[in-house]
Length: 289
Image 1 (cartoon, rainbow, N blue to C red):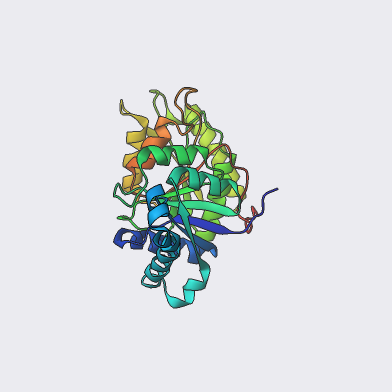
Image 2 (cartoon, one colour; image 1 turned 90 degrees about the horizontal axis):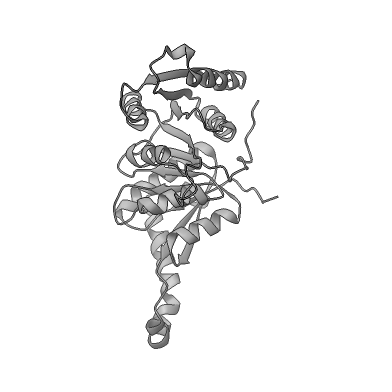
């Protein structure tokens, strides 16, 4: 069994753009009572630098760490600094994040997807979500969340949902938020005769039994792609968070995220909490009842 430690891993570079990500990490730290590990990943010094500028290469980590600590002090209140820890890593972002997720101890990873030089590349994000050993909270630095009173869960009729519902219960209770289970109906039939409605109602009943306020929204696609219909609904409802469960789409896709999930993750500005089929743990303070 992996050690559970109630920690968040946040990939945050010490730059102007990183300040917005850090403020978002602070919001989740305060509301969830977790410790934040700030990771800054830099390129490993070249062989030339190690051979001919060995002192500078040796001091690089210490210099970057000092810069990251100074940067954090400009954003985080002094009484909150004790809840932040710093990690400087050499190498490529994706392998390092995957390796750290597998070591255990992190409840989830905070990643910026804003499309800037400080954010992760889309293909890296898809692979991270599909392969990581802990969930990923995907945020856009330009659209910070300050409260979560509504959580949307898009449901594919073919998906397995237990882990997603456990995390939904956790966040709903932490934030006293209402959950909306959303499914897009492609068939031209009455909503209450559809499998989508029946499945969503089962999930609603499970959440109501856990004391979570919940409702169901079945959306007719009217010839549009499912992800477009759901994205429009998210834009209209303005939730504080979207929780989504990934699933394997094809054996040859080299990712288990699926195009439906990928499009939702990349095209919405709302924080998306992505859970994959590899993950089994829940936060240490999680209680269903």
